[in-house]
Structure formats: C-alpha cells, structure tokens
Image 1 (cartoon, rainbow, N blue to C red):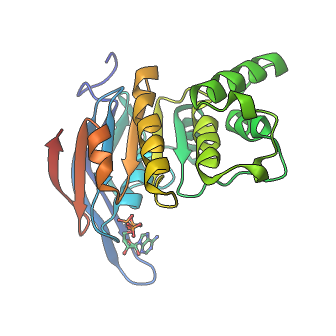
Image 2: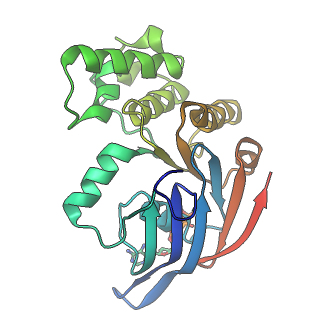
Length: 231
Ligand SMILES: Nc1ncnc2c1ncn2[C@@H]1O[C@H](COP(=O)(O)OP(=O)(O)OP(=O)(O)O)[C@@H](O)[C@H]1O
C-alpha cells in the first residue's frame, strides 16, 4: 500500500509490553508482526498468553513499552493521548465478547454510537446505520428495542456498530465465547467477510473454528509469537 514501509497495514517491529505494577512482569516479549490490508487473521494461544494485550496494542488502547508500531506507514507508538484517541475513533472498530448494547435503546440508536464524534448530518448517519444493519442482516429489526434481541442478534448489532464508520481495522476479542456453536459460526463468517468491504480483521480467540475463516493464524504462548501458519 502507498505510504507503508513494509507493504503491511499493521507493522510491528520489536513491540513488547512490560508492566511494573504490582510486580515487574513481562507480558509480551518484543515481537515483529505484519498484517496486510483487507486480510483476516486470528490470534490464538492459551489463556494468559498475551493475546488481548497484543490486540489492545494494535487497537491503541494501550501503548507498547518498546518497539515501533506503524499503521499504514504512520508511527503509532509514542503518539499523544489525543492522537491515539483520534486514531481509534477513525480507524478502529472494536467487537468484544459481550455486545455491550444499551438495552432500552433501539437497534439503530446502538449502531449510531459507532459514529460518535463523526462530523455527519442526521441523514448521513441514518444512511450509514441502514447500510451497516443491512450488511449484518438486521435491517428488519432496526427499530426494535435492543433488550428484546437474542444473543446472536446482539452480536450482529455490535458488529454493525463497529463497522458503521467503515474502519480500516476491526478487532474482535473472543467474539464467539458467549455464543452457541451455530451462532458463533455465523459471527466468525460475518467478521471475516468484512475484508470484502476493505477492512482488516483481527480475531482474538480460543475458538479453533476461526482458522477456517482467516488468511493467517498467529499463535502467542507465554508472551511470545511462536507460530504463523497460512491457511
Ligand atoms: N496491566 C496489566 N498489569 C499486570 N498484568 C497484566 C496487565 N495486563 C495483562 N496482564 C497479565 O498479562 C497476561 C496476559 O494477559 P492477556 O489478557 O493479554 O492474555 P490472553 O492471552 O488474552 O488471556 P485470555 O485468553 O485468558 O483472555 C496475563 O497474565 C495478565 O494477567
């Protein structure tokens, strides 16, 4: 891609994480990782290995204690708080294990939360919400109160909320953990398909089925990137 040094959307070089409180702990050993634009990758590994920490560094929810993180060629490590907040708001959509919807508000109102801070007219917001809901197959439920949705439907709304601003990066942390098998499959498929819309997708998961839906699997064990297998 234009503007990148390595050709990757996400390029980590020697990125690591160490915390000093409550005791000095090395959470991630310095690692290199490249993720190409419009691909889907899974980050897998045992509990406590550092998967969420890695995803939160890539999503700029935390800063690494060392190394360089370039996103589309632009250095993210060391950016100001305001710069990080702007990066997250513009470029990153997050999907978590629980959908975190506002129960008493409508499906559309929840999706619109993904546009907070965007300089858009009411009509533009409505259009974007409709498109996102169509994309996750929930257009018919747009006006429904979110508290009345099933678990799978809630996840779809959460995905629509992450997608509505067309972020270049989607980070999903254990998106299937709270769902039954079949619903989980649908969610994995939906997330991986975001690449068709140009998004780059990072799935943090214990779910072995995720490998079927992604372009690459990155394995973290004890804070180290130990394996990379292309499917
Ligand atoms: N801010 C922090 N301070 C101290 N320890 C931390 C901090 N953040 C994470 N850890 C520890 O670092 C390790 C890695 O955590 P992380 O959440 O990244 O693992 P994970 O692979 O996502 O685990 P799981 O699959 O159980 O969610 C864990 O032992 C965790 O307790």
